[in-house]
Image (cartoon, rainbow over all chains, first blue to last red; front, side):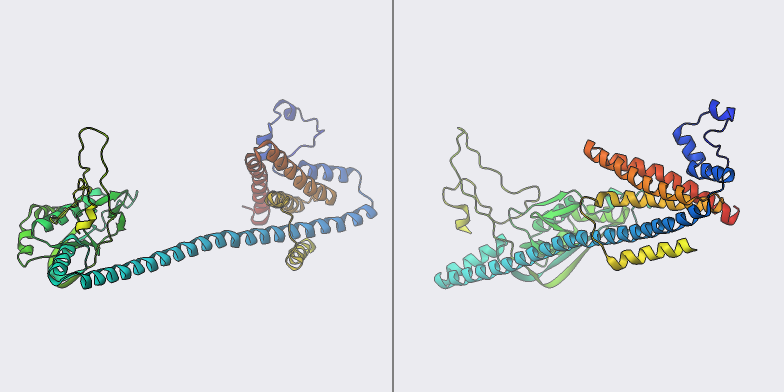
Length: 314
Length: 110
């Protein structure tokens, strides 16, 4: 190759002494090979030396192969430990999820038990009043005819290059709020979003990309089911929210549909956490507003200033 | 040809013996592999250039591995182990690339 021996008297090599990186790029071969070749040309090595050197080289080559396979095995051996940790975490999540499901089922069962005992303890008129109140406030499973409003994100509106989504074609939490509020206004007695029953204190919020109903994420397509009188569909169709959503669905790719449904079953909402009123230290006590942006219910809402536990009346 | 067989023998030996690398040496294994690759490709190219020298090959392999390991060790002690091993990989990688390009020119005349 073009490499010059170190002791070569080539003047250009001295004038343009290349820096290390340039030399590295131009001449990647160890210059020692050229030196050795030059030396060999001058003084041919003795036969003994030649034959002693060859086995050493072979040993080194064996060592290199050994090194490769050891390194490969080490890398492979590390992989399972990483995967194992991941699998362990997944298993733990699954286990916790099933535990939560089990406890939820147990809570539901106990709740049934409580209400059954209560029904047995109460007189007939009181029990039926309690049942009606529970149905109205969303704490009891209800069945009946009503409407189902279906909203789904528009498809194909994503930017093919950047993956950025055009905002309007996604169902927003405010759309669900508007639909739920319009359904209440149209006379709905019970409303659920994707099987999540709405109560007086339910919230429909957005957290990043997700929509949370009572802090539980729901994903599209969204189905807002409502049980109410037969006139509800017509009144909902005439509502501002419905016409707005129709307009949105027409201009963007979002899908929006209203249909009547028979024999809807809406589950009970989880038991609300009871909040107790406490005397305020400030001179002007103000009842704390309950519920969030999506507080939607015609039902009786717990008064925050009652001295007795507000949950007692439910 | 013998060299290829020796390399294979080494690989099989490694698979068969299945040695456990001490934890202290594990960070240096990848660097040692890159240094060994550099020595191998340098040797192959020298062979094709007809200037292969056994002593040069052996010395370059051992010194490459030792120096690379030493640099990474020093870097670890100084808290810049990751950066220094990147530097070692870059330098050796450039050499490997250059030598492989020369081998390619030898083999394919292109």
